[in-house]
Image 1 (spheres, chains in turn red, orange):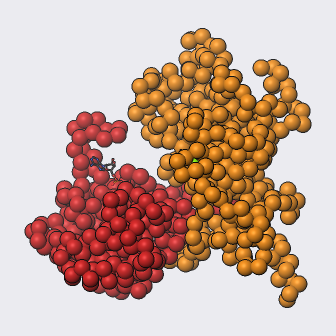
Image 2: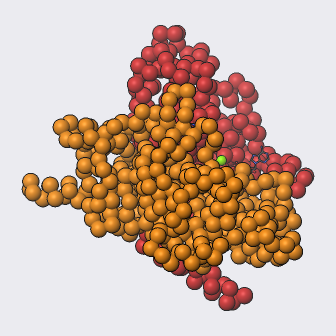
Image 3: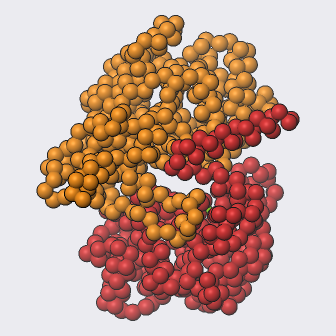
Length: 285
Length: 347
Ligand SMILES: Nc1ncnc2c1ncn2[C@@H]1O[C@H](COP(=O)(O)OP(=O)(O)O)[C@@H](O)[C@H]1O
Ligand SMILES: Nc1ncnc2c1ncn2[C@@H]1O[C@H](COP(=O)(O)OP(=O)(O)O)[C@@H](O)[C@H]1O
Ligand SMILES: [Mg+2]
Ligand SMILES: [Mg+2]
């Protein structure tokens, strides 16, 4: 990818005070620890790692929904960590988020039309009629029949709700979408529909994605480059195909080896391999 | 108990489910959650049940154990025979004796199935004292052994800890330890690793596999993940909209998927291990499963099926489950094997 750098994150760090999970009182959680990466125009950076590795916190810090402890976040050359409110607001038009849970992220009392028009209203764009036209255009773009615009979220399936969420995030013509586990709550057949849609939208609209997920196969299906995260740090970053075919870091290798694939012979061979590794370790101890 | 032990050598399958129908009674009408499911499971075998969310996997498992929410749902037809004994007509007390002792269950979320106010040791000792009548001393010794068996480091010192002191993977190991405490002959595991990270999942599946082999347990493993099925199952049951749509030995199923739904499910999986999988176009299945409020009386997959034609029986009849290859059953008018044959004829 040769696009211009859109997002540049440098030395991003976020510590949480207080207890959560195992940690004792007072010990800071180093949720994100000196993380750096760039996202270029029109490309997808996949951020993959197991739960608690700091993926969501990274996403929230980029959006300034969480205040980073240290580090810089430059979006289209503008430093967001120190940006005044008005500038941040302007930047947020071009920097949108898609959440995991299509159930809780849509207001159940709003119609789909109201949900998708919401960002347009907040930013006072257009009049009623032009907003309605735009909403219909967006619904059409994500594969929802605009005739359903007056329905409520509960009348839609999970996959359709995620389409609505994507339509809303596209309302302001963003350049970068931060997608936090956007298909994790969906069944494979529906997940494939949404992943295809995201790839198509990227081609049509020239969008860039920071695609956050724990599922290595899902991340591979959309990413140009991959960053592997663990314990708040990026351990390995590179071209998607490279990272998957020739992983360098032992953790990446372990992660890839653990993904169950739909091949019984391979899975059983893999299990035997783990068993003999364990036996060898046991004999050595 | 000895009678139960000796009867397993007979020809009666350990578990026989026959025409099971379970419905929910809702204001909108009856939900046909499990709609005529039949299968058998022999001692020492692993049967994987796979299908998308809402297809009836969990309700089927709860039906087997008599754990349906009272008044909201009921088995309206069919039989569940365990070791030749009908379970659907057993009273609550009798079922409680079977559960935990002979049939045990592990659920997806260990945090909701473990009691946060009781120590791990107390929860491990409960089934041992209740079903095996062990003394407190003996139960405690056995509990430590069980924790060691599920590879919890420093078992003796971890016995008095509470669930919140354990990580997600450790809690699921504890759930498994509780489940196998009385050496059940059948373990039903409903999405046991779905809430876990992949590396933890691999080790928990290894543990389940080892215990299953060691105790010659039968395992009914429910999952939405074809990879987990590939790793664990001897035989596979594919469910769709409350019905079994395909049933075959695991290698046979993956080598020769016959149902258009099974094929589509496999094709829709993003691949982690194939060169060039980067930004691949996935074969999505259009639409979604039908509502189980009034499920279609015709093929339930017809609306999404690439092979269903206007004038064929798909949209006028319900296909029966039939054997299209040895030991390979499928519920469709268009199994792969007949499509190939038809194409061969016309070519
Ligand atoms: N608001 C918070 N307060 C304290 N700790 C938090 C908070 N949010 C996240 N964490 C901790 O930060 C770490 C990273 O969390 P998160 O970014 O959610 O990981 P991921 O998205 O990769 O699962 C975890 O240890 C988590 O418990
Ligand atoms: N409490 C309930 N009331 C009404 N319908 C229910 C209830 N619980 C489950 N169902 C229905 O039963 C069907 C099967 O559900 P379930 O067995 O949980 O699916 P799975 O485990 O395969 O995801 C679903 O279509 C669901 O809507
Ligand atoms: Mg997260
Ligand atoms: Mg379930």
